[in-house]
Length: 128
Length: 129
Image (cartoon, each protein chain N blue to C red):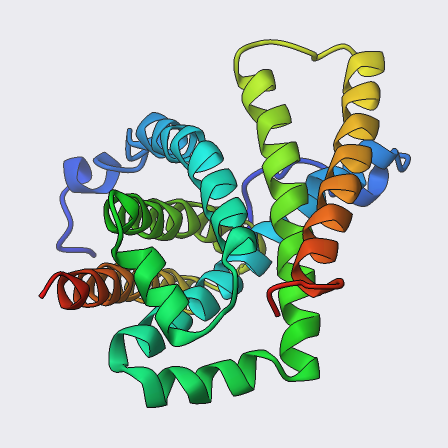
């Protein structure tokens, strides 16, 4: 004898109906990251040295902090969606799956926040 | 949950090299997530100030770190090229077996060439690191 009603047993057993949105956002972030990753790679390779002065001057100049902050957020977002699929596919045990999905979400959110904070701190320091 | 019908395990299929690219896309994706942690750590060190940055650069220019950076660069080149291949598929292009095999070869060649150029600019004569 269960306290669950027959209706309660059948509701929400189907899809969560957000699969298309996951798929689409993964593509949108991919399309945005394609030019951004070329820009970032070439910029880093073009840096004359990796000295503190050269790196912070580059991060703080022109539109670089905007593009870099944008790239960091999109990369973390894209990573969150991608890692999620990998975990869902390969981790069979529900408890581990949930734990790793939460961990990935938190780590990627933390990465995005840290990246934006670091870029802003460098950029605003070089303004003053 | 285990009672529901499951699709056949991948090992029932005959191996085709396009499968290697498929799994490499995932492997390099996970590798790039780890590389992103490194990139953010580098940015955080630069934000923290010159002494923290100097310590970070000492770590980043050590041999193990250089190997990891090299792997990350190659992973980025592959994930970028194969990602474009996936976006083409998403638009309905290149699904024929011959086309998929040709695009796989193009991805491998372009990714290796781009990776070699990047690694040369990074670590070669007059490179940044």
